[in-house]
Length: 217
Image (cartoon, rainbow, N blue to C red; front, side, top):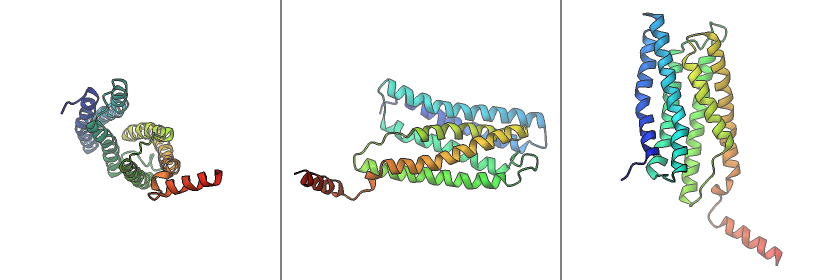
């Protein structure tokens, strides 16, 4: 099996998740040991996370431009996207570093945890929906709201990783993440509604078409 350039980038992105997570965990464990080291490692982890997110758009663009879209790439690409976001959100909520904004918003970690669960549920729903569509030979176009959602969540999570550096970064990350979560819910339901024909029973479309043709006759 030949691995395309786009797929190689996707695989590299998956591998990059490991040092990203490791850096963030070490940074949080060293919070009380050395503040300078803590901030430096957070910055490195956030940078690596941003690289992971950026390569998501790069591999897809290369695959389409070079006409080298592969089944392996279709499998690995969404997997890499979801894994890096979900793992980082779990760690952010676990350590709660800077999420309270200096005690002004003590329930922020709880809200982020709930929204993370909703976002994960949304991704599972869309995944099942696309599987049903694929089983019927239907190819569904990506939703613009879903793309904007991805960008907002990527930026929001990156900023939340740096929430412990300064409370202003925490506020910025929280606001952007909240917007991304709202878009995730909206885009999910909008995506299903726009493609609701996927959920129709077999033969229902043919029956409706026959009825329409009879009315015209």
